[in-house]
Length: 225
Image (cartoon, rainbow, N blue to C red):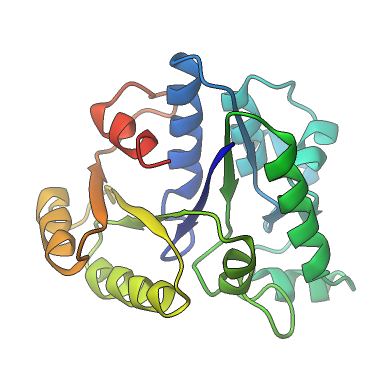
């Protein structure tokens, strides 16, 4: 079993885009692949077809339904907020141990490649005491850190790498997903991050179509898993 935890420097940064593109790339190469996104916020059951879990299911070639979404995203909340806040608004809570158990069972039960997509940034709160960083620290799966090419990303990305290093987590690579309309060029952002990222691979991915899977940069990312 090969696995990667896809995390990011923030929300709406390109985690699901990368996950779906990787799934399609791996499947096109004949590799078995499975993916989960355990926790989702901003989930509208009346528009579930437009959600991140639905995008993952489509890339996997699985049937599209709420029942299938529940299998890969058991913790779903309506408010587009941090998981702990969204859960509290619904009178619910996230049992951290159950999330860990779900991820571990998924990792052990599926051959080939397993992708675990996180939520928000690396330290988004999951409950009163724990953040996504704690989940990644328990699972100990190699990480792919997704960031953008927006102005400000250099500090956000290098800060994230410093925090992950302090937890002794294995960062397999950094993926810079091109931010639309940014004053900062993708190539310059990648070059600068490479200077500071020590031996960690930094790979830039330009804006691609939703169904893209054959860009050379995706092959480089897949090789990190």
